[in-house]
Length: 157
Ligand SMILES: C[S@@+](CC[C@H](N)C(=O)[O-])C[C@H]1O[C@@H](n2cnc3c(N)ncnc32)[C@H](O)[C@@H]1O
Image (cartoon, rainbow, N blue to C red; front, side, top):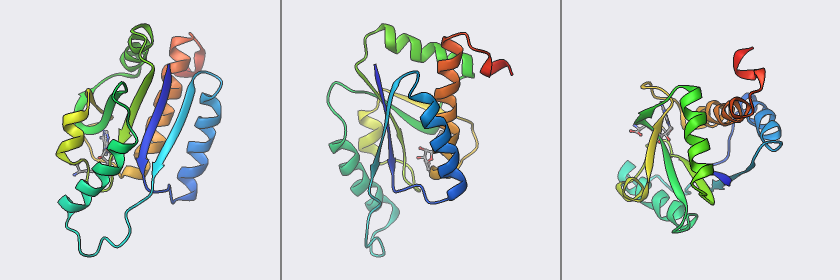
């Protein structure tokens, strides 16, 4: 199974980039993982939030295939413990999902079209994080899940 993480706009803060890079390098030893960064919209001055989300949605939908299993990172989604999340990943692997796609929304969240396409919604907390911070928190959770599935000590250290 391949995991793809779709995000909008480059990660800007150095402290986030360093953390993301660290877990991305570790993850490569466990699973086929890649990130797709959709370029941030330009000239957004004349667009309201809804228009911006619609435009982002068009770009997101172009990056997804019909057969992809799509999970949105969304504060209103289902909350799992790290062990439960690892079990979920394992279930997808056993169901022979080819490409598991996680999507982190833009600064204003997702357009309805993306909610309509999604197979599931996953929440990291009922609190709201910046779309940039979620990248680091979530990649660490994917790494953690893989160490749990391998019975490695990372989760218990
Ligand atoms: C600043 S948040 C958008 C908040 C927006 N008000 C909404 O209703 O979605 C930007 C993105 O970060 C991600 N995000 C933020 N907090 C999250 C959380 N607690 N769990 C999962 N994803 C989260 C989501 O992908 C969200 O679309």
